[in-house]
Length: 176
Image (cartoon, rainbow, N blue to C red):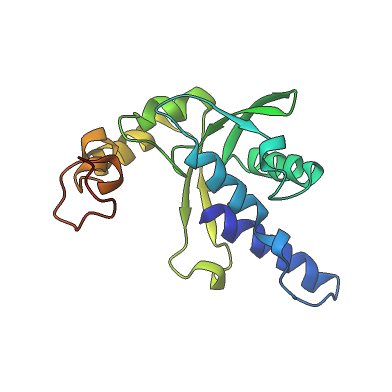
């Protein structure tokens, strides 16, 4: 959400300044969309190998590279490089984190800032705030959200898709 808010607010401000219409374009959402695609590929506390050619249905390769560069420049991700259209990406734990990942370690690896969104969203003067990396800040984040970072809480609802018992009706019929 923070990547979407920041990219769109800056893009719309540029358009207003240049006198262009604020007509929304599909590409306006590319940084946030890319971040969601990358986050969906996360496995524990490891880098994501993001295939640019696998995402060519999302946008042309040059736009994908520009979107990754924007996310990297704004510290939503750390981009360790691209080889043969495969980008090695680390995600800022303030943006997305998998269960069982210690956000303090993940943040320290690349000195990621803590990112927060203004309560008023796009209506705020600055919709996104970046708090510089500091181990004590990430300790407070961890302590305040420890149950979220514990891997077991991600499966408390017993996902029917993965065949575990559930209080919810089964979406996939039992196989016998």
